[in-house]
Image 1: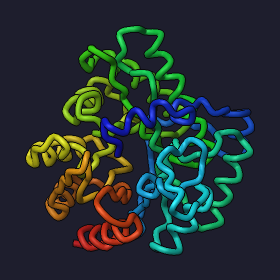
Image 2: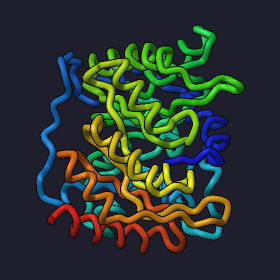
Image 3: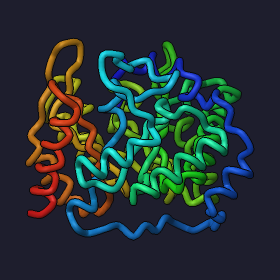
Length: 323
């Protein structure tokens, strides 16, 4: 979802590190009506109709989202509150699931979360995942900083509970002059996944950064952690930023082996003026071969209008999921 060049934007954001007041988390739990029922593994009743399996992410619409922490807002474009995003998606795209980015939240206090959830439900929609940034690394050599990464993510688990989201995507931040460490990351994420299990919230890892979130590294972390509530979020095109098309397909293949409820659909990305493209039909073939039954979230990243690009991805996804 977010390339290396976008990490400075996210990790410096007060919302991305849960710096905005979480408010009374007990009140947030109460407004959600979600009781903590620890389970040995997640059980989501996924829809089977192709269109019902689709979601739309808020990231492609960052130019329109009104919130103090959205540094990508384009004032030349009409504004939109995140609370209104679900209604727009339902009306324009006939899709009832959304994936709101943590940085697009105006607040994380109980009152705002209650208003947000009410707006989503009024639109006849639901949240299927919340992508969350993070300043601290799950594999930092300093145990205190690893603990901070875990605690920051736990706050967003509470947000997911309040909004009825079944999962989070957490960011595995890099550490200057430190190579990604499977053992440290696995131990930290095993603890976080345990907390997620207590709250019925799946923890997902995405191939979002070519170094700290390399697909093969993430697969090793998931296998090492060996926790049923820790899964992968395969992004169709992020690994293509390496410039190696075959590596991208290998990355998607290995992550779909560990995927559960969410993947990101895109056919291209633009990075520093260069366009990277993948074969969408081939990538959906990898999805089908893996037996994946979860949601496919549209995360348009190409050239042109986010609205038109998202519609094209929706049309293609319905076609390939129907095959």
